[in-house]
Length: 91
Image 1 (cartoon, one colour):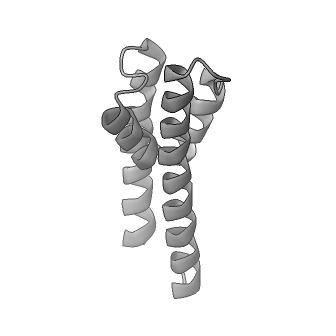
Image 2 (cartoon, helix red, strand yellow):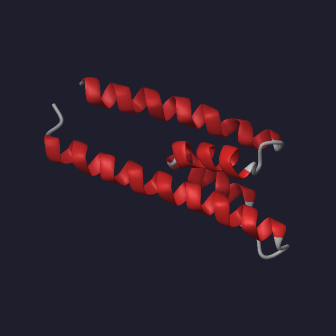
């Protein structure tokens, strides 16, 4: 059984990581428009692994990386994290 403090800490962590993922996708989109330094795709995918809700929202909101085949992984990460969250909260 998971105590309330652990659940609270998990919630804070997930919210923070997803906000960061959304911001990073937005920053990379801005940098792509200004032809500035870009965030490597491998790093974007790593961020998307831990914050798939924010990453997916960033992809849709900023229309960023939606045509790249690698980024099909983001909705898969989202699905996996949803299942893990549900499992965590149901036990």
